[in-house]
Length: 455
Ligand code: ARG
Image 1 (cartoon, rainbow, N blue to C red):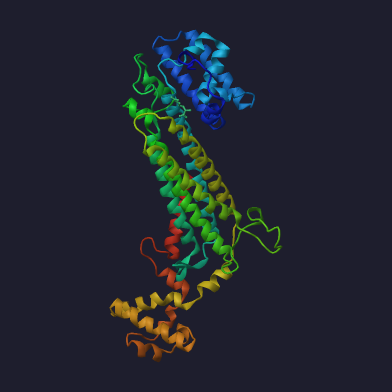
Image 2: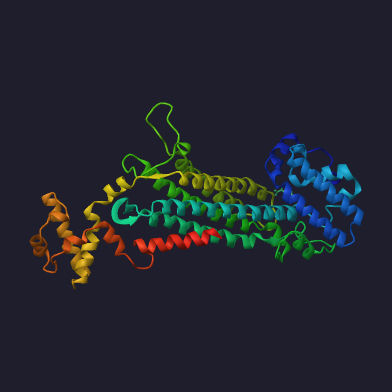
């Protein structure tokens, strides 16, 4: 492609070092769509005849079909997907093919391909995020009555509905979906026509290309357009954060599936055994997801690091954008899909959850609130209940075994009937503030999500 300027062949070692076809071949569909749109702009500008444009378009479509059927032979000597396709086209149709690269550089071509690819993949990831939200809502609805201890510092804190816990992840994933939609806006800008750095002396109808490819906007600075990978960084950041959310969900599932908790059983289809210990049933999906999140964060850091030292404009370093991008896209889609499928088959052990939540100490804050409602300042109430807990510990009993006299010795504000308060379900249903887990609130949230996710 650059033989005019060079006297000797590229060294074999360099060919191996610089090729990207082994991984960027997967941009072929977008590369071909971009080239067809480009050929239409060349036709519009009088740089191709109608016949030449037709030859280019049908030649490219034939190549696309061959790649799809696995019958196309990629050549490492042609370095990347852009040159592989163009060279093959020219081999097949001759002169017209050699005109395709008019007013174009691989610098704006690769920027276009990556944007087209990421636009599609952002949509696919968004669909998978929504599917996982649906799975979480379904699991919550199937176990709408289950109460578990909520934890802070991994210490039992207060009772919550299991559904409330799961809906927390639905909220996180909704922010992820919003971030994807936002990143998509900046992916969806058309860079072709920026050339290598400074556009072209040949006037190209960029609006036509944008319209052909469904871009609502066109880049406005050719130097920015060929050197910008912000849109890829943003998407990798959004993906890394989805990974963080999946990793936290995984950690919850791993804990819940342990013998110590035993709140859930993950189905055989989504667990594995041990080659040594016959009794083992391991939550590998969750562990792998937690593990793969490291790669997603690494990919973001990798791309940011690649970009941070680059002088304007395009530098070959930028070819290193592809592997982290492809890996993050593949990994997050797989993780979202497998988690969504696994959740649908989780069995919840309401009895074990009830046992765990039956710890009266979880209602200590309710007792403090009881005193507050009787006029005791909260700090004081907190201290009184602290002493109540200490008294229980001293006697080896729970709140229920203390007498009214015991309570009244701790604070005269305690009245007959205080013990009736010590009921987990009641405690939950008293929590009616917006966002709190009363049965009624959670049912309304479940319905809100069901309706939102149905569309
Ligand atoms: N394979 C290259 C990449 O991925 C395409 C652009 C190459 N441009 C160049 N001037 N060598 O970035």
